[in-house]
Image 1 (cartoon, rainbow, N blue to C red):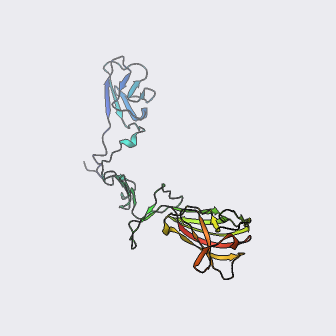
Image 2 (cartoon, rainbow, N blue to C red):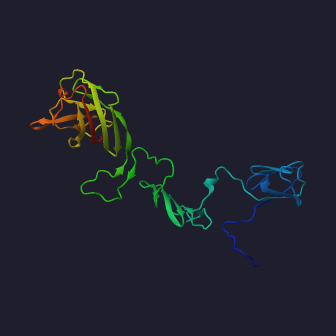
Length: 315
């Protein structure tokens, strides 16, 4: 017989399952070959008479129960399954057996999900792999055409980040190409000499910082109202947000762009340096014949003030 249209695939469609039983005059329950979704998933016929679901029969699991009197001895019962049960474990029963593009999501069949490589899932749109999820160590998720977030944040587990190892390296040794830290915020700064804390002016003790990788940038405008009779020791500013690296080549300079109210000679330049293995920086002056020296408490003043910026390497 000729037909119009595409032939139904043999491996997808199959006939309905029919269970048959014979009455013995006493039995009212019969065991089905599989559990239907409900009574409406069965067509039950006794002696060529179709039975009404729930009225003439009920189903519980694989048990078919005839309501009312037992089926007469010799009467034939047919139970045709027109649907199956939908168990909670249905997802674990779907097995595409590694066939490429076996789960089709759009009308022209070029948006698919495949598992044709062991322990790997490929998501394809327009016939091209866009996203790959792997179970191996290293690059577990591969995005072919970039990743765009229209809302929300990209959250990276502690100790991980964005790996730039695929890019070209500069000359010399590269210790790390992992961008694993970013942070910004404020810190409360304080000043002192070796033994005495200075009183900070209201509104002039806050510094702003940004951390990118292991590099920390800080700037601020600090001012005091009293040095509280301090008379000796080097002036330092404490409260940097992260402890500096402890190696000798990790000292960092401090730039001072504005200064006022200091007990130093006119034209004396000042600066500073971030000490290693600490959270403070020292203020320096260029008043030494040998070069730079640390500023002492007598060179500051009750109303001393500076505007500074610095960057250093965090431990």
